[in-house]
Length: 475
Image (tube, rainbow, N blue to C red; front, side, top):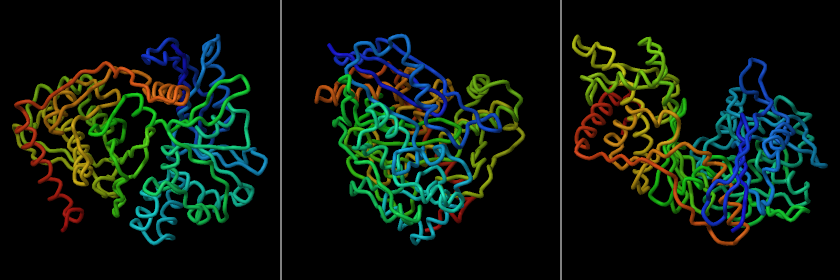
């Protein structure tokens, strides 16, 4: 038996799990918040990376890492750490999805010739969160810092480099690289010309190493694995395989599938990411998920989503004809950035709180079903859907999702899957063998006899969607 650690450095905290290499059983855990707060009390857009190290040190205190032989690191995606020739940060890391880079992202789209050109080049279209857009913002708004920038890293790259004592060799993995906007999952290569397009000059980039490779060994003899982004680590921790899809229910939503090839999507709807195992992870995003539920709860004056769920289950499939298009913040899938939400089917008998509550759950899940259909339409096999996020535990979600998605739905027990995925990667680097750990404890829900009912609800939603926004569905 060996012992490894997985480290998850999220925007808000560091979690560490110490696992048995044979079974994946979590032996010990550590946690520490990041001592960070933006000027408005929310998450900051600029972060001194040293804060990540301070949090790591606190989480690992009390002998947590005693006996550990290898460490895997995952971290928040899209955090850009610009460094000078000596390896010092030229400014705080640019993190999160801050709107300040939206104009920069749009400029880059135009500069390369449109969305299709970007999708073909690197499998994604620039968004404000991506490092490539942040580079463009840096060049435009902080040109002196941009000129001093000679090396680019993301959060997990930088943490791995620090744990190894800042060696001359700097590495990253396929998963992290695929989210930068200047590395292609399809070709497995960087596009330095896109870095120059964004930053105004060339910069050094970390070497992309394989999923089972080690980034190096510390002077104390600890193996440090390649590391990866949080999304890829969570998928690895869940043990998802070809045919599995992960639907994440946050304020916005995402649908990610394990696939055997990168999907080049000329429309840019699919973001072609790489996973942490050598496979691919095409992702489709929606702008609205749980925010639609919270908005409905506020409208109805119910105190929380649990109460909204109970209320929705007093209605029946189809919500007595009510259909909610949940485009409260515009929408990404379909591409309707300036759309508003739509509520149709109002009749005297349908104007009851339980029917609106049901329509909110059905609308949210139909919107995610649209994203799922994008992947199905490109040949992605969907055998089962993993639901993640606190809203996955709501009884209304569990009741409605299988019939609307038309497939088996798996709701896993809450756990630190990103940190577990990082520990699994560390085991792979340590032993040279992909660890076959037992999957997470889960509940499985089947569409069963309600599948035809779900298909009718989806069709009702599609009809309203296409009538409300014919411009998005014209042949």
